[in-house]
Amino acid sequence: MYIIDFNKPCHIYFVGIGGISMSGLAELLLSKGFQVSGSDWHSSPITKRLKDMGISIQYGESASHITENIDVAVLTSAVQDSNLEFQAIKEKQIPYMLRADLLGQIMKNFGMPIAISGTHGKTTTTSMVSEILLKANTDPTLSIGGILKTIDGNMRIGSSDYFVTEACEYTNSFLSFFPKVSIILNIEEDHLDFFKDLADIRNSFRRFAELLPADGCLIINGDIENYEEISRDLPCRVITFGHAEDCDYRPANLTYSPAGYPEFTAVSPQGARKLTLQVPGEHNVMNSLAALALADFLSIDTALAEDALENFHGTNRRFEHKGTIGGVTIIDDYAHHPTEITTTLEAAQKQPHHTLWCVFQPHTYTRTKALLPDFAKALCLSDKIILTDIYAAREKDTLGISSRDLQKAIQDLGKECFYFPTFDEVENFLLENCIKDDMLITMGAGDVYKIGETLLGN
Image (cartoon, rainbow, N blue to C red; front, side, top):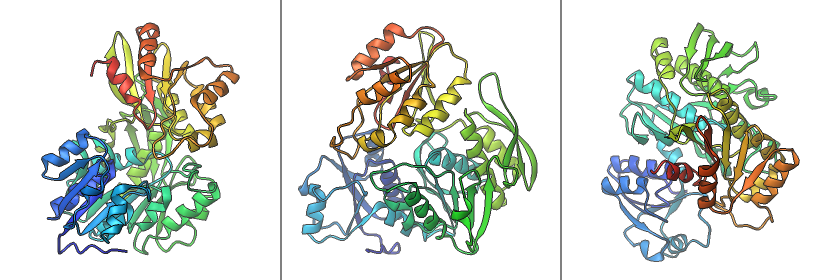
């Protein structure tokens, strides 16, 4: 594998530079004196921001983008052998590496690299941790999988030893990392186009935990079934959070404010602390406990950590309040797994509303087919369900699955469900049927958020 010498900045080219993680790494390398360029399919707010920083970006996929002066190329695991730029990189014998390998090499340059993993909740928890470190004036470097308003982006370049990043299990990317502290939020079936089954996924998380050094720490959800299989015999310290009485950090006296936000007591080795969050759902109670455990491990002042958590209002696309039109509240959420859908809709049920509408865009054919019954059951927590076509992402339609199959599964459960092949049809239907005091959630990891923005005139 190619090893970057951070003392000798060179020319690095990113294939897919507009991705949330790739763009952050490009920004970081630019700040370290590297010449950075890249390509992406389309112009976006992210690519425009990078261009304003002085990064050269070309659009589309073309072998002509790959020039002789490139020293090394960075790819994501989604880049296929058929990619014209990848072919040109190999033909010109330009060294290349995966995004995860680059991120792992970057982590080696920090004294306190922190990796936040789990099937769900990575971006929110990374953002909570970021807010705590910022409140404590630690001057951290942050790599977040979403836009955090506090830093007006997904990347912050700091000058201290603190480096915080999300750690995704897909294609075992996180096994290329070098963390000193890791958080494991949860472990469930997902990415079944890569993993064989849940046992295969658990094995990867165990290998991820084994990356920690003896003076490091694993913060793990004690509600994970047989979590000891992941944490047993590690040389580092292990801290647990969860509902069980024997967890180091657990919630007590959980209630919800009139606005639907959690209020609870965080029971911990440091004592009991009362918290009121500004993000909905019990899943965010768990996320905040993980962040609080990390803050305590890092010896951050308790009052600062609590203040950061109580003033955290979320990141983009995580139960994001987009606006109100005609008395209808429009929320957007990134949920694309049955568990995420369940937690989001349960949180929504606690918010003031008349009728709860959910416009769901399934994400990838493999996930939709593998988890179809679970998707149907989860979506039934909404009063009214509308489906769009499946967002293919990295996949091709080879499995014979469609949104109509999901519609039938929902209808078989006795729930009314509508399907429309175009966003225009969805928007027209909503304009005719949503009324004052309804709540509308656009949900999915694709571009379904555009429906809400169109309705709001954005």
